[in-house]
Length: 91
Length: 94
Image 1: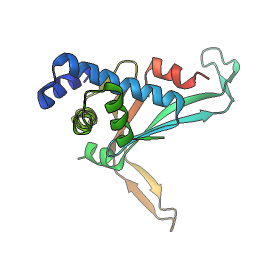
Image 2 (image 1 turned 180 degrees about the vertical axis):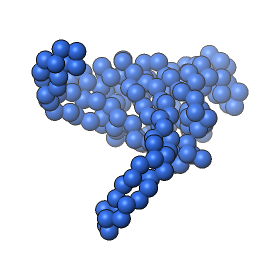
Image 3 (image 1 turned 120 degrees about the vertical axis):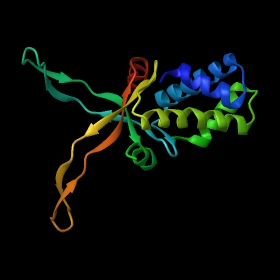
Image 4 (image 1 turned 90 degrees about the horizontal axis):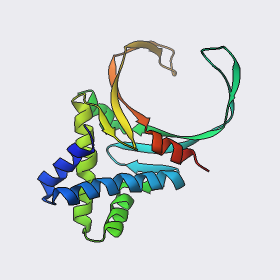
């Protein structure tokens, strides 16, 4: 499934034009991206939480050469699926 | 932190033409259709944002931390999200 399939669903169910539906899907993901850049969390009830976590520096190894390197501190995005989503996927 | 209803609100304000009900409907269709695809075992790929897949977890033995009993955790399927390149870079930009 891609954005195009979601656009199709909105077009069918809401009755907006394909162009409007596509713009709305684009807008939703753009706003989520903007939000995660500046905030720490988006909670979508029934689906899950997108959480930004700060990771400290850590020692790592280049698996190809065995050389030790420092993996720099960074901010990463994680997704924690809701109980509802987890349960429905196991049905 | 942003909740789903705040997202609904934000979409409404930014778009300028939707009413709350329509904005809510659009958001619900987006997440419901993604959940449905995952339920059917499909992969969901949103370019620039990320992709959702379903991963199979084998059954395993674990212990009840309260009484130490060994329990068998059955095999299960779990949703997995991989952040897209653009979003990964934007989240990490300082």
